[in-house]
Amino acid sequence: MLEFLSRRLAAALVTLVLATVVVFAVVEVLPGDPALVMLGTDARPDTLAALRARYGFDQPLVVRYFKWIGGLLTFDLGSSHAYGTSVAKLIGDRLLVTLPLGALALSWAVLVAIPLGVFAAWKHGRPGDWGVMGFTQIGISVPNFWFGIVLVLLFAVTWQLFPAGGFPGWRQDPVKSLHSLVLPALSLSLGEIAILTRVTRSAMLDTLREDYVRTARAKGAPERTVLFRHALRNALVPVTTVAGLIAGFLIAGAVIIESVFRLPGIGQLVYDSINNRDLVVIKNVVVLFTILVLSVNLLVDVAYAVLDPRPRVRT
Amino acid sequence: MKGFLARAARHVGFQIGAVLLLLFVGTALVSVFWTPHPVDALQMRLKLQPASGAYPLGTDHLGRDVLSRIMVGAQTSITVGLIAVAIGMIGGVALGAWAAARGGWVDEALSRLSDLVFAFPAVLIAILITSVLGASAQNAILAIAIFNVPVFARVTRGAALSMWGRDFVRAATAMGQGPLGITVRHVMPNIASVLIVQATIQFAVAILAEAGLSYLGLGAQPPVPSWGRMLRDAQTYVFQAPELAIWPGLAIALAVLGLNMLGDGLRDLLDPRLRLLRVG
Image 1: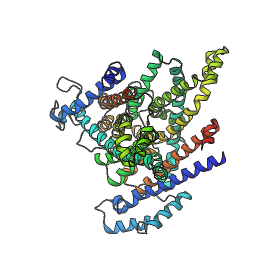
Image 2: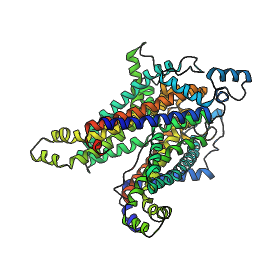
Image 3: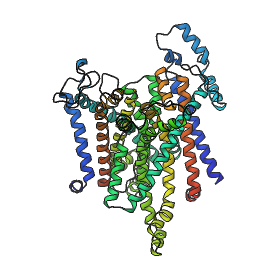
Image 4: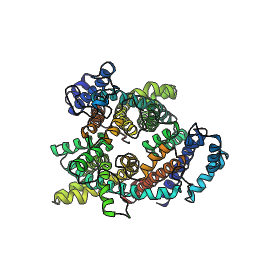
């Protein structure tokens, strides 16, 4: 177990280091002069020189890279060019919106997808199954940001049950803040519900064919016990894996959804930073996303190893 | 081929997918030669008009015909999607086939590289690229293509590896054929159906990605009509002209739905045991 974990951790760390090199290369080496990207080609030479000095763009690449990594390790991410505040604080504030949004969307997805998937597997090959599968086909095809706009049309414009966008802030009004995350979380979860339902269905179909399920049925166990106690329990292994992978993509999907609902989260920060050409913020946020995705994948592997001992033996 | 057509005639999902795809490609082709109104004709007098005989889907905030723009938007989606998937496919298939044929450190290194790309969600790759190189359709293509390379590399590697274990490939090796010759002559023809199915699904994913990027303003730039951009513009006027936000989204959803159903149908018809990668 310990060997398996350390191997996975080492692989994740290698990927992370490679990722920082790539991000650094794209943001600071590829454009030639990052100062020119940030200020534009019509900037005055003395302004450019001042910015280069401020962010150390005049130092050798290797020095800049290791300074950045050193900063990452000590949470000293420098200061944003556009906002004038520390990047670490900026990211911390924005995470307070993005993380609850992602958590809401994921819990909603799990709550809807698992019963739907179980139902479809139970009704395998019959109209109930076709209905669920048709729904998942639509769920993966509809762009989530359009679904968000449609939700706004219905729930904000027509029925005025939820706000069309914006976020009052947890400290100002926690209830209204939660309220304003409902529609964004719903739109973010649509595609994930579809994928998770399909995975639950196929995992359930696999376990329902197993001998112990037949034994349970032969013993006369009620259908509900067979479905939920025997079959679902084992089907949850692949479902957990996919739910974890989805969590990573939820964070990325938040970039677009936050823009739809004008939520001041990480996604909106990225979007604004592109428009402001704030390379310092972009570089750090992209690495943060990568760390999040990698840690989620790692957690999934650990959960997988705990739930199911087989893959551990194989490695 | 005859058996394929007979089975296709019984597969409803495949047929719906094929019809939607024909509609999608047909619309794009027609729009090259004809649109009800000029795509870029600004008529501020006629802005945000509801649907009418002259403007079946109404007009946008600059008085342009929405139907014409949706038709031309299909061109943008197809162009970006096709080129991005083609680049990703050429790169990914070559790398995957190489990894399968060579094994050892090449395989290991390529797996690590594809892990690396998968650690960045596609939107982030696009954001990184556009933040440095600027927003344009070309850079959106580049971003989507980069994401497609490891997808095709993984699928190709997996399918090719299973071929390398087969007797006819072993026989070819014993007869002294080199890895390149075997890959081209024996492996590729046998994994083509897997790649066709995956390409269909990736085309759908690419259209969704292009729509998302142009919604964020990172894809095709105005005045080129793109469905994502139209949605962004429509959202500003959601209280005055809500129906404007319906049509471009419906177009994206139907195009993607068609490709997904076609892909799933092709999989059932060509090889029902296939496992697909679906990441976006």
